[in-house]
Structures are given as C-alpha cells and as structure tokens.
Length: 153
Length: 132
Image (cartoon, rainbow over all chains, first blue to last red; front, top):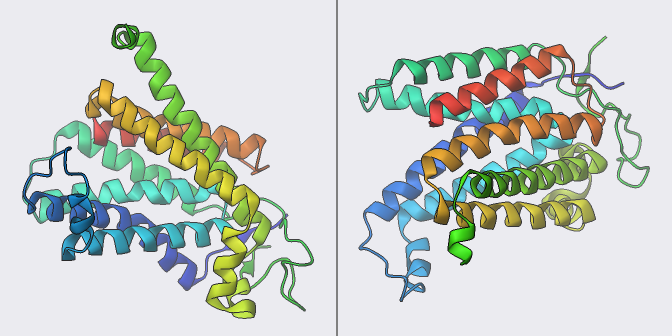
C-alpha cells in the first residue's frame, strides 16, 4: 500500500488548486460586469470578451487550476484532493470579510469552521491509500512504484 | 407541457441528482485516468511537457471523464434555467462531495477510513452553509 507524505512542491500545487478557482471566478465576474450587456441575439460578442484582460486572466487561472488538479490526482487520492479544493470557499469568505469588509453571517462562519476542521482531518493522514496502478510502459525506467514522493512507514 | 412537468420537488430533485451523478462520474473517471498514468512529474521529467500532455489527453478514461464533466456543466445550466442558484449551487456542491467519497471507495479502491468520512461530511455541511 502506498502512503505518501507531501513534498513542498506538492503542497504548493494543492494550495494553488484551492485558491485558483475563487481568484478565477472573481476575475471573470469583474471582467463581465465591466462589459456592456451582451444580448442573446449576438452571442458572438462573447468571443470578444475572451480577449479582455480580466476575462483572459480568469481563463488562464482556470487552465492552471485544471492542470494542477490533474497533477494532484496523479499522486493523491480523490478523497484527499476534494477537501483541499473546498478550502477555496474559506479563502473567499476570509477575503470578503477582512479585505472587502463584507458582513459574514454566523452560519457562514460556522461553514468556514467546519470546512477548516474537515480539511485538517484529511491533511493529517496519508495523501494516497491506493497501490500504484502504473503499468510498466508508463513507469519511468529505473523508478520505483513510490516515485519521488517520500514513503511513510 | 414540458415546463409544467419540470415543476415541483420531484423535478428539482431529479435535476440536482443528474448534476451530481454526471459530475461524480466525470471526477472519478478523471481520477482513475490520473492514477493509471502515475505521477505526472515523473512523466514530464521523462517525456517533457508535451509528452505529459499527450499521455493525459490520449488516456480513454480521461476523455470519458471530460465528456461527463461537460454533461454535468450543461445539466447545471439546465438546472439554473429552472431553479434558483441558491438551491442548485449549495445542493450540487455539497452532495457531490458525498457521492465522490462513496465512488472513490468502491471504484477507485481508496481506503476511506473514519477520518476521511468525517472530513467529507464536515466539508459537505460547511460548503452548504457557506454557499446557502
């Protein structure tokens, strides 16, 4: 059974997975609200929106998110990566409160607390609990199934 | 007639269930594809960035996963056309966490122990409270 501890680089990838979606959503929202209203009868005008700076930044962040998400899934369980992605909601709530000075209801603070506790539960366990499914063709020559990640005793 | 059929709690539940099932199927297939390929950093070191991208996009479970993710996206759009975002968003986001955990246990053979179950339920409730 493969049980991995995260390297610093893998931790950074998970952190990017967490923050990239809320940042991308914010960029897209900011870009779209600064554009004139787009009519359903002229849907092609949406293509022009793609080349505006905020929308382009949002799309770049989403592409980066998907690449990081796939990379994380290549060395960690889905049930390990999922809670990490949920941390993005916590970052949004904290940014909204401390930066934008928005009021957060007690129920939302409870949500922040529950997600944080849930993520800390998973973070203290192994990243991967499944045996490597590498085929001989996919595995680099001379490498072990554990790859470059540090094996937990 | 069609519009009338799509009203009511049963129709809402069916639309949310469609989003959740297609989304979970897509994510589990994608995760299975990445597990079958192994550590992408190793592949990138061996075959370069283009080799890593080629390995991913030519993996059949990945292509199937993207297909189901696209289905989930259009199901979400359809759901938003008939229900409020305040219902669809939190319900789909939180339920998907639970179905993903169940699917990961049965299809990906992940060892979902009490710690991970507790985390999934806490995050599920937390996402619902935050998004509602």
